[in-house]
Each structure stands twice: as structure tokens, then as C-alpha cells.
Amino acid sequence: MYLAIDLGTTGCRSIIFDSKLKEISSSYEEYPLTIKGTFIEQNAELWWELTLKTSKEAIKNANISPCCIDGISISSQGISVVPVDKNCKPLCGAISWLDTRAEKEAERIKNDFGETKILKITGKPCNSVYTLPKILWIKNNMPQIYKNTYKFLMPLDFLTAKLTGNFITDHSMASGTLMYDVYNACWCDEILDKYDIEIKKLPKLAYTGEFAGYVLPQIREKLGLKENCIVAVGAQDQKCAAYGVGISADSVTVSLGTAAAVTVLCNEAKGVTAKNITLCGYVEPDTLVSEGVLNTAGTCLRWLRDTIYNGEKYSVIDKEAKTASQNSLIFVPYMSDGGGMFSGLALSTKRCDFARAVMEGVAFEIRALLDAMESYGKKQKIILFGGGARSDVWCQIICDVTGMDILVPSTEEAAGAGAARAAARTAGKITEPLLCDRIYKPGKNYDEKYKRYISLINGEIK
Image (tube, rainbow, N blue to C red; front, side, top):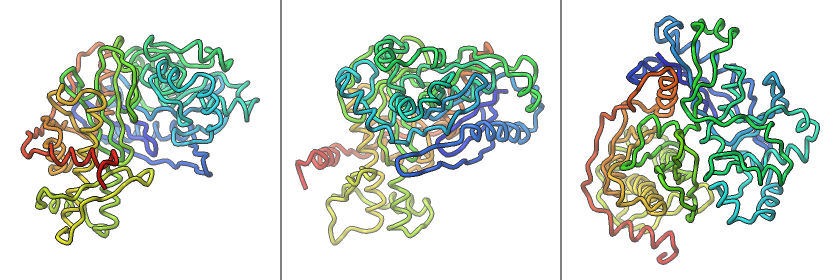
């Protein structure tokens, strides 16, 4: 048995998986974000408290002895950062990845290196959401805390340290910091030297599934674990999910939740050339992933439910979307920055047409991201997971729009399954990826409507 801890932006879920990655039980607790303008923080100690609480409950719900747990690993939100002392005690609130206070610091990095160079080194654009600007903000505004910091840790690193006493991160987490050389898989000396950041203040780099340490005695006692219970190095949640479902050379993974993330393996490191596409470290050596993100996917469907559908159940939206015929109505899902729109409204437009258009719009954007990653037409299948994958009609629409087979895993908890797979790997067990129990085949042809969608977002039609 393996204990997977999935630490998200607003909640912690602990899941027990068996050796075949079958989900046995789980427990979930939410925690708040503290928001004051551009300052968005979390209590890192609460991450830890709820990790212990949900772990205990998941073990209890599984109706097993805690001694049956052979290993633990973690899937985590990325980019967020907390400074800690030698005892892993937070010196201030954890600065969330949603926090944008470090705009001046991001601008300084952009001026010092230039957008092209920072992208070439890190695979990321220079943006205040990443970790380096946040660390520079602490250095500039809380110099005593910076001086007293033993390590700057991201959520994965913090939980790993609490479990084992060792300060370790993985390459997928590190690649979200703007301090990581994505092509050489190491902390970037040039960037660290430029801002006088000592490398000893950063956690050691390791790959997912490597041995992070044994669970500390006092933690074993709290959870009832056996003496030699191992902890495996985990990964950032999207990469952990890709590992859990077994991303391969002929497949793409799509996480369809609040946001949509499209992930593609890159066996050869190529420069990032498209908007919303980044290059990231992956869970295995000599492998990178290209990732494209649509910030509003499930959020658009929730907006539709709360406005046009007056809070009705998603099953009603699914039913109506299925009955709607393919028509001229096009939805652009850029709702996070005010760029969302409907085009092609007619007197004959019905409520069901809005439902289908929203699902189609997200599907069009997934295809556009695949185009931008030069993967469209080169991959055979999409492995789709997340809350949106519950909808048969949405899965079929994405299948039709992309012209690719859609495979849906047996559990929504793909990131947790990736963590369990990492734990099994460290324990010396070979665990296959999640099984997929739903398969969709392309039917309707959306090529002409997709062309109109692209013309619309490029401003060629109104």
C-alpha cells in the first residue's frame, strides 16, 4: 500500500493506493488563502497539520493497519515559497503562486537578462508569479528574514522536509522557480550569482521516485507507520499526473479542471516560441515536458451554470449540450483577462447552444495549444483527467475537435496516482500507470469551425 499526499492550492488530499494503483480510500481538507490586494499567502504549518490529519483519516478509512504502508510521496502545487529555519519552521507566511507583489523584482530580472535570455535559460517567461521574484522581494523588504533563512522551500519540499528532515526538491518543481537551467537540469549559477543568492539556501535537486529518506520517528509514531517506511521524492502536480497516467511519445495529457493544462513529452530540448507555452523539467532524467495552459476551462462551465443555467446541475448542461447541433455560435474562453466572448449569436440560438459552445471553445483552445507545441497531428491519443472528464459529452467534443482518441483513467486522482507510483518505484516495485476505462473515438469533423475560431481570436473576423 502507498500513501499519496496531494497538496493543492486550496486543499490537501491524502489517498491510499494499492500496488495496482487502485484507489482504496481518501480524505480531504481545505485551507484558506489570506488575500490582501496583490499579497496572497498561506500558513505552511497548516499544510503540514492537514497532511497529518488527512493521512490518518485516509488510513482509517482504508480499514488497514498503518504498518501496511510501504511508502509515501507527494504531488504538490508549484512556485509558492516559504522561508524556513534549520528546524523547518516557517519564518513568515508562505507566498502563494497566485501572489503578484513582486512586479518590480520581475521587471528588474527582465531588464537584467532580457526576455529572450531568461526564456532560453529557464523555459519560462519572466513573471512575478514565479519563485525568484518572490525571494528577491523578501530580500528587499524583509532583509532579516532573508538573512535568517536556512532554506527557501516550495510546498513539496516543505512536506518532504517535515516527513524526513531532508531538504530536497525535484526537477519539475525547480523548473518553476526562474532559478533553474532547464536545458542542463541544475540550479543556474549565473542567475543566482547575479542576485547574490547562495545556492545553499535552496534544496538539493533529485528526480521523482528517488529516495528522500525514511519517515522520522516522531512522525511514524503519530501515524502508526512501520520503522522502514520510505518517502519518495514527489513532483509538481501536473507532472505527477502525467507520470501517473503514463504519458508517452505517442500521447498527450490534458488536465481538465478549473484550468486546462496540456502536457507533451519533449525528448529534444527546443526553445519556447509560443504564448502560454513553457518548458519544464520532468520526473525522469534527460526528459522535458512542454506545457500549455488555459487559465479558465472548468471555470467557464461554472460561469455558464451560475448565470445562464441559474445554478442547475452540471448533468442538465451535459444533457442539453448533447442535444445541441453544431452551429455558428463560437465561444472564446479567455475569461480571466476579460477576453471571453460569444460570436455568431442569432435569433435561433437556444440555451443548449451556449452549453455546447462553451465546451467547444475549451476544446478549440486545447487544439490550439497542441498546434503551438507542434504536437497536433503527431500524437495518437489524449489521456484526459480531472473534474471535466466526468462529462461524456465534453470528452466526445474534445475528441471530435482534436481528431484524437480520448482515454479517461479509472480515477480522477491522477496526480495522487503519480505520487503513489513514485513511492512504489522507490520501494523497488514496478507499478504500471493508471488503467483507462473509457475510450472515445472521433466522429464529427470540426475543422471548418476550428478555422473560424482561430480567425476570431486572431482578430481576422468579428
